[in-house]
Length: 177
Image (cartoon, rainbow, N blue to C red; front, side, top):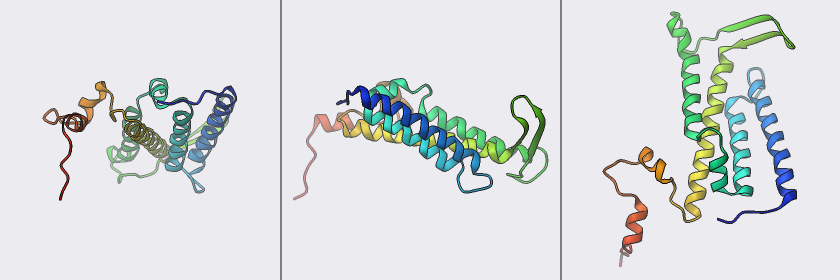
């Protein structure tokens, strides 16, 4: 895989990555009263990782990501479901909003947190994880690599199937006359 090797590009990339993620978190937190929220924030964070992959290379990106993208998505779905099911356990309808207020939080003062924020955080993690994983799979495929590494293949395919890459390497596909 080709990789861009420029000191200036790497320096600017770090700053852009940080700024995009700050705006992403701002949109996540803003989404309760104004447009924004978990979906657009997750897309922005996912796009910042795509930018890293384009500049540093997809193999490096895959090794540098601290948490596997599908694990991030799974955690997001779990948090979103928990925020929706929490009211059900208390006898209220699904996705009923609860708000918690803390009056004396050090360095912050008053803090208001509700279940919609938990739901948005779950959506944020889900969208971010799925975006990054999808782009990595597409980038690997277009680079001539298999879409999944050897360790990942068993997670995404049936044990009864042969990888399509093996079929393509072994035979020429027939053409219709």
